[in-house]
Image 1 (tube, one colour):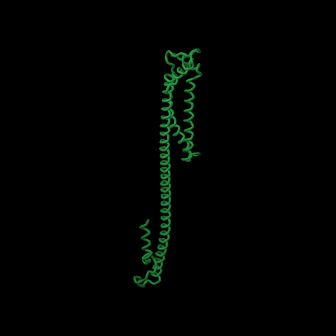
Image 2: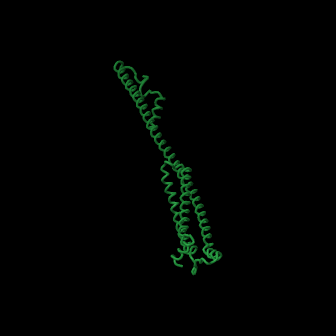
Image 3: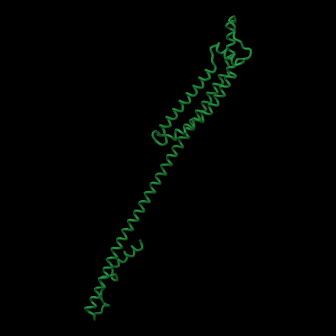
Length: 244
């Protein structure tokens, strides 16, 4: 039956199929909005992303999940709407409104023709699909939380390792530099002392030769100078040279 005739029949019965379908679609949209608002709030509380850089990333992830679910749901609801208009709310060919002279029993029979059990089946199917979508959303939520925890742990480990390496390198270079400066200073001081002792010994020998040329200097005890330096000083000097 043509659309205008069907609409006239439904209006005469105070029914509006399109209004009913629109209310169902709006109800589904409200349920989806409420579900994702609750999902986002719970995710923000669990992951503590409020006021952090991760809040934007989390919102993008939730938006992506919602768009994916919304796209699938819109296609399903569009098919459901077409099915309802073509089958559930279609007036059979040859249907006519009861006349005023007809008994109430005849009118009730005609009204029973409009009640289609397939509408209940479609609504049950929609409920089942919404349940499946809710389960998939919960699974995606668990995966998102697991990835978030893994990312946080990885970043913490990486930061700790980098900080430890940086401190180690800084301390190692600083300690080596300080040790080299200290050793060089000690070595320079000891060499100056040994040089001074040697010069004093040479001057003493020269003076003795001048004032006592006949004395046998081969038996002389060189008490000071590089040649008679204490064994401990020489060993320490060689050790410092090797450590440089």
